[in-house]
Image 1 (cartoon, one colour):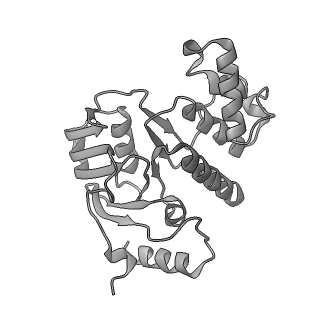
Image 2: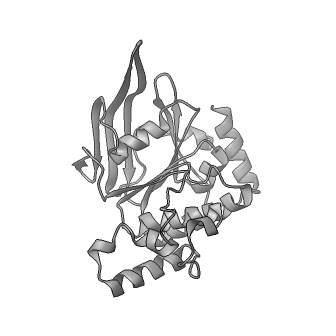
Length: 261
């Protein structure tokens, strides 16, 4: 009988959904004064529409570089990245990024921060209605008039999440967004993200160094190695939702995953 970690698919998505993201033989080299650093090599990955995929691995394995390439913030050294068949050449509204630092505008209210990216495309009434809807969605219905300095770190991340969700991206890119939060707030944010994902059906690529977080969230976990960064394993999480961290099945899968690293 095969264990869950023997059910590995490298470089391909499970299921037959339309691919939201297709990466083919992607590489990235950083040129330096004394030579070069081969950061990513021969990355092949397909993610289906509506999947929640976590990317994990040791520091320096290229997780954040990969995310920036998908976002269009960097040019690849080789290979291609396609979002629903269209080659990524620059940043675009089909991809939005949530970083560990919330990057809110400190002089704007919570509501104004959420409205910032769409205010030129909507009339006042529609804009107010949309902002109110997303405030409620992230549990901040009564905080629209607050400034960022007046709310907690977890609440700031809720604002950052609402600010990108209102743009309705095809792919949501998240770079360790909960890494700086305390354990209780992090768990609350994980539950919120899962609730929003089930409601809105976004494709999510989530970077984390925390394997427990990856097991909690992901349909699939991509494990990377470093020097250069490559995909070591593409693992489908076999646990049903909702997942309970205290369950025997969760702990067995987590331990087996740890043993592979």
